[in-house]
Length: 127
Image (tube, rainbow, N blue to C red; front, side):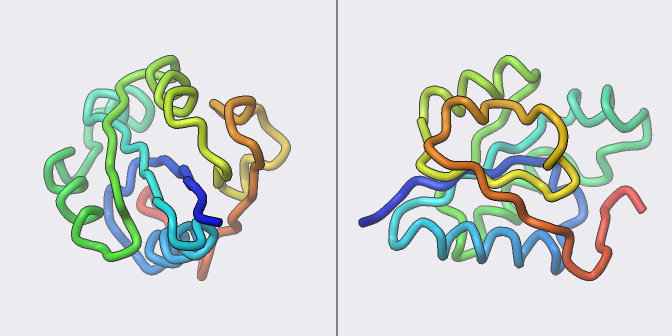
């Protein structure tokens, strides 16, 4: 049975860790859709400082949409907007980063299941 899978993030400098996350997300969909929530430029600046993002929203969205694993990319500007999108799409599976395992994750209550994905190879756009 096909499923809707959700993940979100900045995806500022696309790296192999991102691609692996998206690949796993698509495989969990079992032929369904992988939706990516993408932080707005303003949200990234607020969260990470004035030198970020490195790539604009349009560039980041274009890169994600070019990947065969991604079915839909949606912009969000606030935590509340992210929560509303997750509620609206009501995913079967929400993927959160492994570093968020012991924290409150946005929108988890609107997903039927939450899975955690640990970083691959220590990649990080921030680092």
